[in-house]
Image 1 (cartoon, helix red, strand yellow):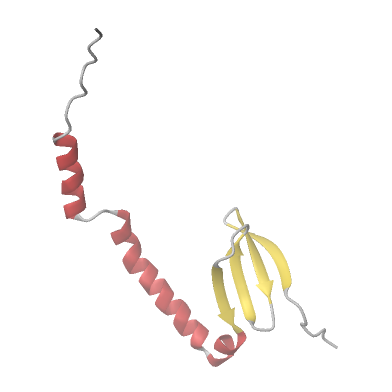
Image 2 (image 1 turned 30 degrees about the vertical axis):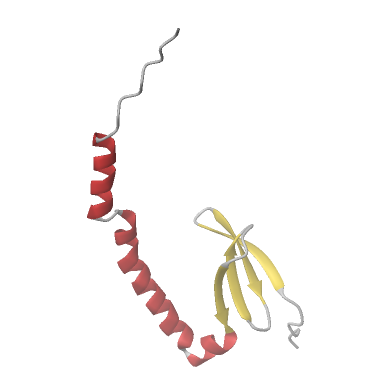
Length: 97
C-alpha cells in the first residue's frame, strides 16, 4: 500500500553541477535552484491532461528565440555607448596653490 502525500516532500539533486531542490506536494512539483524561492512549477492536473507537454514546448521555443537577442544589445544601445566613450572629457588636472 502506498503512503499518502500529506505534506510536501523535499529532495536535493544536482543538475550540471548545480544544486536544486525538488518539492513534491499535493498540488504538483516545484524545482528551484537551492537557496531560491522562485522556480519551475508543474501541477499534477496539467501533467495528466497533457497541458504540461504543451507548456514545456512553448517555453523551450520562447527560450530559444529570446536568448540570442538578449545576449546582444540593440544597435541603438551600442551606438549610445560608443558616443559616450568618444565624447568623454579628459580629467582635469589638479592645481595646487
